[in-house]
Image 1: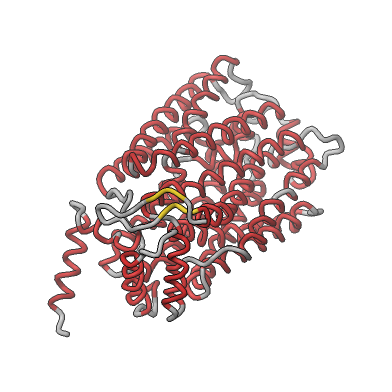
Image 2: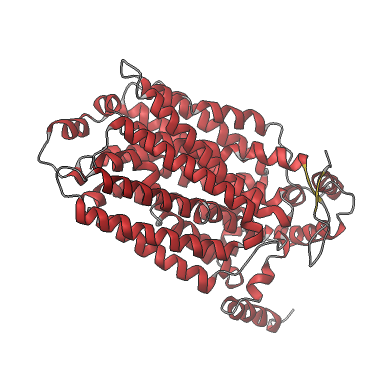
Length: 509
């Protein structure tokens, strides 16, 4: 199992190989991304299926079919409908903080197991739902599952991966989200055609398949050496695991850094209080800013409501579903795979900036066409409709090779061990808060802003691109346990970190 690509150290790198043991463990853990992506894809498709709307949201169904005077942009504006989508994120927000304690004190593996089990229960409940309350409760369980998985899986991947390939392995999480979205959209396309109007049940219930893989697979996952050292005093056990995952007995440099990080970690009794200290200010800012920016790219607008958006510009239900599958699934997954190949060569900053420019240009063009061609009634002609679809594809591609995977990668690799678990929980919590806000308000914003919705999100993309250019240091190939040096070398953050160091040195022993 030790066969792999040598990564023997140069320039601060550790010794080791990319072993099959690491690859297989990370592939199984990344199923946490599949359940997240499947839910994103399924939600958008199911909420555009007429039998589903007729059963649970008759007001929306009636408005869509019978109200000919209502604006194209307002047909699907329903707080109840958006509550179905966004209830998952409220549950995920709460669950992520419980997951933080479990991940810190019991390990990454139990959190992944809890996430899979909760998601499995929620998928069964949704597939069997007979009323709205049952449907929403199932969504809450799905949210608990996603909250635990999103908190633990990116940490697990970053800690298991060799530094030189950490970007590629961690981007596998976003690749799996894309695979989940792709699978969900094709399943929606098939189930929408089932006669009798019960196809939506299959779409919702089939979330149990990836959840089962994650739940059972997590039982066989090894714990990371970082977690073993953090939770136990058995250094030999952690060293043996480190040697196994690196495929070499020469792991002294990495092991010593883990020991140092563990000693600092064990001295911290209250990580939440600790993370607000000034010396962790750069990490805290990134923990809040990066997931916030990831959500205000507008990507979940496309993911959740792509079928609805396509119906808004005049496409049929079945065409809307297949377009969603092709764009959100095929384009997104292919772009994320490309990101895995180049992230450890180009670096994080270059990809985030270039992806931001690509998303900004495409959003401005989409908004301009819809402003000029789509009124409150009727539809735009086919030529413009397909131009909009092309621009959406370019936009999705830009997100999928930049802010999509790197929005999870960068936060997972910047925290020192003593605040890593709580830091990742903040990332997940901020992600869920703004996913909830965007999901809950998008249909109302689409109704009121109309085509201006794309200019709104385009403006945020411009802001986040400038933020990365000015404030995010490069983290590629930097070992995770010595990441603090990138802040000490950054033109802005070094003043804050050095100021704290100077005050600490002045304090009497």
